[in-house]
Image (spheres, helix red, strand yellow):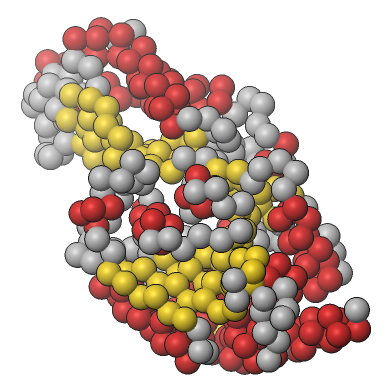
Length: 420
């Protein structure tokens, strides 16, 4: 027992805060927006870290054409010329653990809302500020720092510990799917997305959609002679809001505190091409929440029936129905099997590092968890930061959270993989 406690102490002591935060700042400085060439550059940069740590590194170009016909193809929103997979691993052939994090980030948005350049990371209020710091480069770097601590400690692992650095999570998750299809699976997986101190054992799904609403143009001065596509969309929007309300009536208790765990949101809206012309076309794009355990086909059927019913009730749309398309990322829901020990193992590691037992929660967003779950890999989320900062101006992650997560993941890795 004393030898085992000594091994745990050595691993925890080997987590290097300065090394970790320096690498987080370096990684945030790479503008790895989903689908951009910088996304690929970031993969090669992290591959250098893993190589320097002495890991077995698999860095490969993903065959996007072949992957696009996979039955589990998750769709995509961003155009891309290339994509790279990256896995670094260490240890023996005993029990295995994967730490999976995505390298891609969303665009910075309106720069006027930032108080500093989003890709020139700064430290403010004991946090690293920059696009992707929270979602989820802080978590990815924490995973690398955990592996680095194992290496520095000199404790040899009986099992296999791997870091999966994946692309395209923000627009569907083709990187995680490609990694799994490459054969990189494990007995368990932790995704260090920002969880604000909780362990997430499930994530809802999210389906991208596009609605095209027809109208009839006319001069704005004689608008009564036309049919505004904008006004034609309003009853459809009202029906969608009612659908959202009904689908959130009895949410899973793991969504405690969330008002709308299965959100239905219109994110893009365009209509008309001249201010004094009645718009003859409206295009609305958005995301639609999939309930835990709900098949994607069933979720789509409910949505399509809602739109069809709204059209049937409207005099114009009854004869000129809305065109419905499923576009962009298509995230199924995912969950950890009930009673699986991974939850208790992660909670124990968190308690031993922080002194507090983290609550079990579910995430209201689609994530790579469902890819691993579909491949039979029990998976949870536990990582640094608060989701409220994700995709927001002045995005940030507390330094203490990143270091604490690295320590939790290192301890969990040692306990899962075992020491030789």
